[in-house]
Amino acid sequence: MCPAGPAVSDEDLVRATLAGRQEAFGELVERYQSRLVNFLFRIVRNADEAHDLAQEVFVKVYQALDRFDPRYRFSTWIFRVAQNAAIDLVRRRRYRMVPLGPQDDGGEDARPERELPANDPGAEAGLVERETAGQVREAITRLPWEYRELILLRHYGELSYDEIAEAKGMPLGTVKNKLFRARQLLRGLLGGEDPRRVTV
Image (cartoon, rainbow, N blue to C red; front, side, top):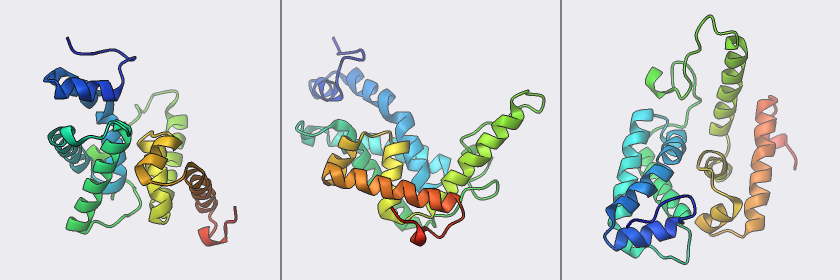
């Protein structure tokens, strides 16, 4: 019987998959699919490409599962594979990291937010929230890659500080300091300041 339930670790599911229980890998896909798509979308800037790339990542991970090192977290491994795949795609197709907006985010289907009904009493608040979210996304694209990467892993990949440190091979303190600096830069960008003038 396949391990299931919230108490079962990713690593247990990997072992179950390697033991021939294919449904265990299905559980891993369910756990990571939305997070991976969200993370990949912030890099490749196209919803269809993000979904396709997520499927490719799962295939790559499945094919290499017997090489997974159980001393490390599965989450850091799969996001490292995803990040490498996304960067390869960006390089191959020469995508530019451009601000997201109504005309440049890959079309209506690529927008993560739904349109609010015109008569929705919360429509105005929702529109303000969407505008703010759009400004944040645009500011993230203007960060230097070393900071943007950590913001994406933390806030879109939903990795913990420890997982990011493991994935990047950085000391935990360095990850925390760089994320602090990244947030300072974001605050400067959102406040209209030149990020080079923002001090920690």
